[in-house]
Image (spheres, one colour):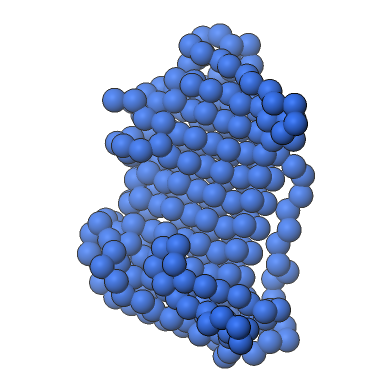
Length: 270
């Protein structure tokens, strides 16, 4: 069965991160059981989200820092729902619209110049999906056993999992190692200012498509990195059945399409 991976990366220099604040001024701890197949979702705004392998219960630690704002004004809220558990850093509302913690794309958060940073660390047992989201910070999932979704705006994403993964950032690179090759839909990895590196599982047969904006040139590798890059750039041998570049002048958009890739191997863009 063929699978698809879509990697989008408009390439522009620059990375803007919120400055890291000083010593921890408040901690939150939560521990609970989540059924296999369900998800632990972390939704931050300012701060990193990191997940490591665990066993038994899911464990979440949130550490708050601040320079001028009061860390006690930022609450950590836990919402249980049919798909698992969502935990958010909830900042004081701006008086016009209430900040809320809800699962998935629901909910609303406006920090209103509050400089409190909340760093999350999550222990994720096998079988529980991990969803890590922040705005100004990195997302990392290290040596997990289940599926991962990671999102940020200003920060890099690093994923290592025996499951599959998807990731999206704006200012930062994406490095992902995927262990499972049985996904049924296309997987997406997107960045604007940064590169994308994917380690693919053994026995994988898939298509990898990439787009760049602002006239940059994309490249990739599969199989042995040195030889594979040589083959990719010349359109020969390793997975080079179809190499197609399409340029649109106004958008300066360069697209490589429908490249069959057979794992194990590494694909690098940017």
